[in-house]
Amino acid sequence: MKRFSVIILTFILMLTGCVNQNKKDLFNYINAELPPVVEMENNALEKYNNLISNNNYTYDTFYTALKNEIIPTYEDFLNKLTKISPKTEDLKEIHNLYIEGAKYQLKALKLLQKGIEEKDNELLLKSSEFLKKSKKYMTEYKNRIVTLAEKYHMEYKLD
Image (tube, rainbow, N blue to C red):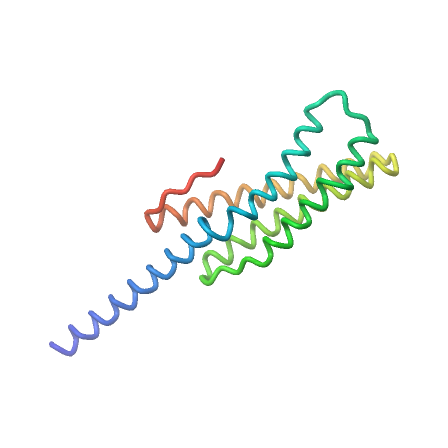
């Protein structure tokens, strides 16, 4: 009986260690690794949103902003996002959703730039399709990261 108790206790301690490691990985991801990268993404998307919300923009100013500011910032963001390497499988899987969503977003921005440059409505429509795919991945990422945080009794809110 004593041997059985030791085995059970060892198993419980190992399980607790796994949970703690998963929680630490998630905590580090949310609080240390992600914020500076997300700030870069927000800067790129804020420039984009400010531009399209201003009804006075021209195709030239839009094209120039995409080429010189928005796309380079978003490329830098995506590069840094792909360098984040979570340790736990659950978080790796969720993080990969974010990467895929960001890749589609970047493809959409590049197609938008090319569509404006070539005055090609087909490219502009294709850009919209990539934005929809991006949104699908981003929504899945957000839902799963919040669910994972709840699993470990962590509060995590997305804007």
